[in-house]
Amino acid sequence: MPVSVSSAISSLKQATDYAASSGASTLSTSNSGSTSASGASNQASGAFASMAGNENNFLKLLTTQLQHQDPTSPMKNDQLASQLAQFSAVEQQVQTNKNLSALISLNESSQLTQNRSMVGQTASAQTSTLPLQSGAASLSVGNTSPGQIIGISVANAAGQVVKSDVLESSGGSNAWRWDGKSNDGTQLSDGPYSVSVKTVDGNGTTTDVPFSVNGKITGITKGDSGVSVQMGGAVIPMSNVQSISS
Image 1 (cartoon, rainbow, N blue to C red):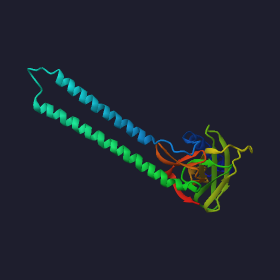
Image 2 (image 1 turned 90 degrees about the vertical axis):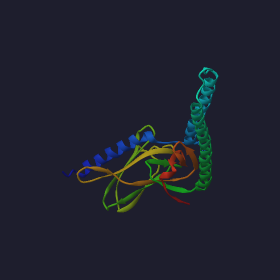
Image 3 (image 1 turned 30 degrees about the vertical axis):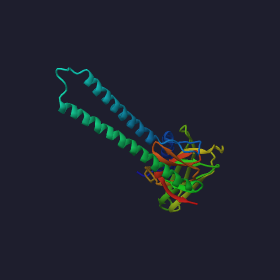
Image 4 (image 1 turned 135 degrees about the vertical axis):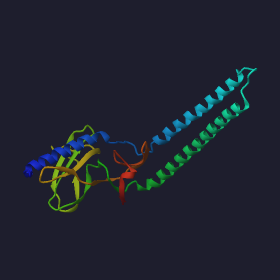
C-alpha cells in the first residue's frame, strides 16, 4: 500500500541511521603512515614454529625410546626405518614452510613498495567507511532514476549518527559532498566515519544503493587482511579500491 512522502522519508531516515550506526563497529583507524607488520605472516610464522617444535619433540622422543629400549628385544629395523622416514618428512616440511614464509614476506614488501607511488593521489573505494579529511568528505552514488529519493546517514566510531541527508536524484550518478559538520552545525574531527546510502519506494520499502567513497591516499600499510590504503585516519583494504586519479 502506498504511503505518504513524509512517511517514506521517515522510514528511509530510520533505515540509513540504523545501518550507519551498525557499521560503526567495523571502522578501522590508523594514526601513522608507516608500514605495519603483516598479521598474516606472523600467523604463518607461528604455525611454522609450532611444526618445528614438533620436529624437536619427535627427535627427543625417538632418542629417548632408543636409549631405554629392552636390549633383549630391540626395536625392529622396519619400525626404526618407519619412524626415521616420518622424522625426515616433517623436517622437509619445516624447511619448505620456512622458505614459503620468506617468499610471502618478500612478495608483500615488493607490493608495498610499488603501491607507495599512490600516496598523494585520490582513490575511489567501495566501502562503508567514509574518510573525513581536512574537514571534507565525498561519495558517489550509483546509477539512479530521476526523482529517486536517496537517504544518506553518517555515524561516528561510537555509533552516533552525526549527519543525515535526503536528496532527490537527478538521474544517473550523483555526487554527495559533506563539509564535516554535524546536524547541529558542529565541525567534527577528521577521521573515519560509517556511512549508509539507501532509497525508498512508494510503499515505504527501503533498499541499499551502490556507492563509493572518495579520499586522498596518505599511506600504504600491511595488516591482517593484507595491503590497505590509508585515507587520513581511515584504513581501507586495497581490494576495495576501484580507481586512482591524480
